[in-house]
Length: 361
Image (cartoon, rainbow, N blue to C red):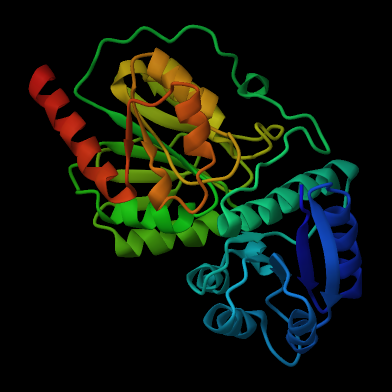
């Protein structure tokens, strides 16, 4: 298999070396070069075009956002922003996505062995996803660097909690690469009388706060970063905080979320499989599951568990996905009731919800 050629652009020699070591350890990836600023990067791109660029935002001579805009307007190359600004989750990081960055990740944590290993997994997978978004044919290799854990480490499967069907529905959504724009389109199309929505989007810690606020300013429904014990309400969407798992729970007629730490599941934290498993157990047939664009298979098994518990399940179709990985894996497992283009998902959810209200009312 042809290796993914990566150009690392960062003004810190230490970060360039760390990223080189991390990426070179992945058999899918070849570091073709490094650059201390965008001007050096332009010279290297002129000699050899990389498959993916990792890009810092704060750099001398030309900042990363300016360089990103130039790359996307002149010679589009998949870019993964690797910046400490991702921790802050500010407008700069959001702007990078708007300018065309495929993903935004933290700079490698120079701390414990576990933190470095988790950075290794997330960075390598982000680069592989970026290459897949361009070529559409790259197959991820599982099991690299550390065990690929299932949702069992957070919540055992068990049997669904028996609940009478209620007038309330809960929509559980999972997304990864390309999901920021997909979620914006999806949530902006949802009316105020929609059922409560819980979302896992693979994002760095600190980034989901700004992302949620941005969506809240654009949508007619209320969107917020989830906090522990938040109630799931109609016309509201809760987004799992970066680097924290989110579970759907139920107490009587009230649905709420639990936010918790824990190991990576399906190589992610938050994990879609964790959210979907909890929805299968605590909501069952009162749930609607939606799996959107993203690399890998996080959420596929969880969506199957939701379907087996009586939930209605939807997958975004290949034509509207940036990366048709997670939905494809769910389809392969037989976990999907409907495959729909992104723009058709909101109306499908509302049709199912309104039929349910008529039936139960």
